[in-house]
Structure formats: C-alpha cells, structure tokens
Image (cartoon, rainbow, N blue to C red; front, side):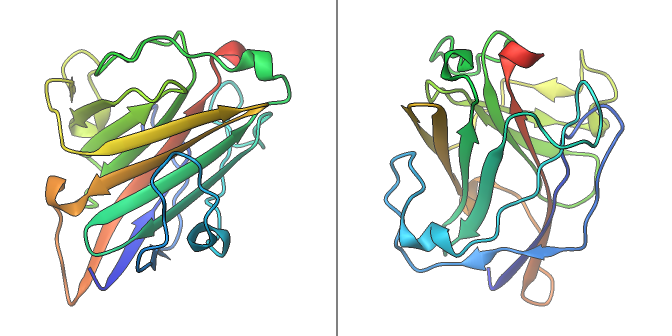
Length: 201
C-alpha cells in the first residue's frame, strides 16, 4: 500500500455519523515494539484521531479522554489507544474469552469498512484484559439480530496494558486478512473507532 486514506467517525452504528475528508495514514518502517504500550518514537509524531461522544449525548467532547493513532507498514495496519480515566477504579474488564462482547466491561473497537461502501465492515475489539473479539457486519447493521456474524474469525493480534489511571492497547491487523481495493496505487477505507467506558453507560 503506497498511500492509504481513511474516513472515521465516532461509532459505526445508530444512524449518526461524522465524516471527514480522507486522512492519509502515515507509513512506517519498523520502530514499533508490539506490547500494548504505544510509547515508541514511531508513534510520537502521529496526529491523533479526534474523538467525540456518541452516547448519551451525541457530538460533544468525551468526559474521559483518549489518544488514538494509526500507522501502517508493508504488512499491517496498527491502531493504538491510550485511554485516560479520571477515576482508575472505573476501569472494568471481564473475560478473556474470544468473541466475548457483553456490555459489562470497557471496550476499544475498530470497524474497518475496507471497501468504503458504508454498508459492510470488519469489527475488531478488545477490553483491558486484551481479549480478541471480531465479527463481520453487513447492511449497515440495520438488523442487530442478523447483520453481525461473530463466527467470522480473522488473523490479527492485540496487546493491552494497565498503568495507574490509563489502559492502553495496540492492534496489529494484517492486510492479508482484509479485502480491499487498490486504485491508482491508493487504498481508501472507512474506519470508525469507538471507546466504551462501562461505568458511565
């Protein structure tokens, strides 16, 4: 991938979106230690993704802040998150079971609309325990009972860490696990990123 543009919004579902002009994700050549702590120099110059609240009040500043960044290399898309809590006792994590997806813990989720068709997406999600949950979403999630498939399991990795009032994560998603289009040397995807603080929802 020579240049990659992404759209992002606060959350993939619920019929409310924030669209942007294409964001070119920075290409790197190494420099990331995949350990769930995005502190390497390769991350420092990357501009964070702006996050806004979706629930309970749409499009206001979040009460808990997060620093979300993306980079890529020849093989992987990397997404990192530093999630800050005013009260560290609010960090909640239940289960490490694959595809666990209940609302009883905090979440960091990445939704990749790899064809940029605004209808279908691949869901990658973790909690502070570092579990992997992934699914295929279709039809813009119009029918919650039928438009998401957790039986879809892809090859990808995630690491997390908790320190004081912060939990952090790094996603490493192989391009070989995604279907996408390359046009004139550019790949454009839609991307939606969500964080969930269970204690505030």
